[in-house]
Length: 371
Image (cartoon, rainbow, N blue to C red; front, side, top):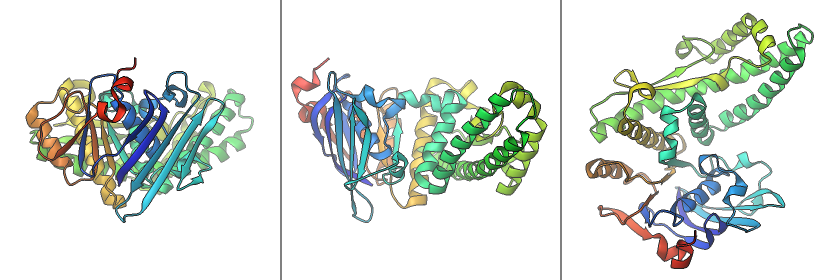
């Protein structure tokens, strides 16, 4: 998948900008505050219908503007062009058009333009709360598995309904039959979701270990799934996961009625990252955390290509900071021949095989200096 061109109107810092990268590794450079990351975020909107780092739509409006508009033109591995338009106005909801047809659901865009991001703010995937790692795995699988995305959206709706019922039941057993119905539906969806996550982690680990070897890091990464359902979850088939959930729900009924919420399921699970058998979140240095995140994202790039046949767009914000030149060279070597990458940097970079683009040339001196 390659971005041919994207136009930004009233988006973040840019009033009117056109960005057209080359097919390989692009480095978009300029001083801090000049709007480099804004361009990555615009591309992310066109690929996944949302901003970077959980940004709200209204936060992406340029200063006092009432609307923003994004036009992206992409081309896939079969040389088929994909056009995406995203519009948002204060007075109306966000609208997304795919090849001139308005999408009824934003989820209809997910997976059409595979996209991976890296930024220092994403270190929370490695050292933050379980919610950050669940978001990572959900975003990855939603781009490669339509069934997973459908199941995940339905699971969230059923979970909300079940929690609502628990809240009105209190500690009584009134409406217990209704609760059983929601419990069964939730368990069936959970079995599918957890099974897909387990398969994903197993395959991602293979690529992650390969990346660590190619980077010459001298450490062995590990990934495992920590489930709220069972400690033996990794050895279970989908049907067995559903049965285990149903049994556990019966065991904790009184606790759920007391706390008025669903106490187990994929919305409470976690991924454990390790280096040489030691949990990364607890013991890794800042350098190890950053390198682990880069390796995971490089592994994800290979996974998506294997599953979809498309090399995903790779958007890397501030990649060069806190990495020595030798490490950067190895990362760039892994990026070469792996599709299109767009990297932001404060200064022009001198590496072989990259194309450097000045933000000031495409945005203009005046706009680039706006506060």
